[in-house]
Length: 140
Image 1 (tube, rainbow, N blue to C red):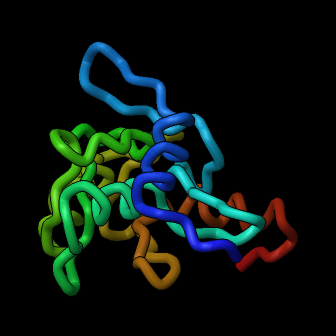
Image 2: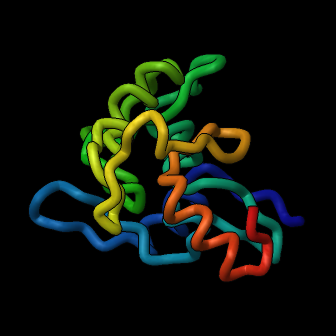
């Protein structure tokens, strides 16, 4: 892979950004899990907001996450919309799903109707999860 200067990388990034009046810098290039991803010569360099943060702001402190204060994951405005915070702060700020009292299909999210799934312990509605598993042929 050919080395790329910081300047060339910033130019490459900003060619794929839509600047909005509200201050968002929206990434229009490749995406993964609704985050902008930067590629060079078929090699994934990483999440655009993380790369740009390192280039413009500086190093991301050890064990810190970048929090999208605007809650728009495709925004890469590292000057005003993204902040380096601890994981617990990022989770506390962003995990509004945990405050919901009903799931997206209207089932009550009571202690009896909640299941935690995956390595990130995502909270799910048991009724919806069982219906999903049954549809996949993995009924419990």
